[in-house]
Length: 182
Image: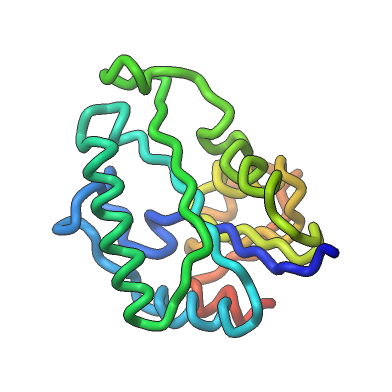
């Protein structure tokens, strides 16, 4: 029986400040209203799945181990604040990376939908109960390609004005604002 609500969220620019290639604890700062928004999503019955491109690994800015350490810390911080994250999916690849093993074109790097579809293979879900929240159009295209209709862009309206007409989404100021639109 398909009944789970799933919220797919990008990390950098949605949950934390996107300083560019955030791979270490000292560079990670939660965005205002991010934790509150995550709590509200959970209270509405959404399973939260983070889907994040991590090209900094392929570019050699930090290691995959650094990413895992940061992710463990983030999950612990969120759990301590009453937020459970169902899963974290990440793509360490980039076609122009300097680390050979990660210099590939793949199906998991957004705007491709591999991180989402990979999760959905083993999930109990209803397609009309899925949302995607991102801060870049590549996030939204990934969700659309995976069959998600409810797309949210965390941005100011000036960025949203430069979008492809085929992409239908709601612009929100932050995660708490997304919840107000559900």
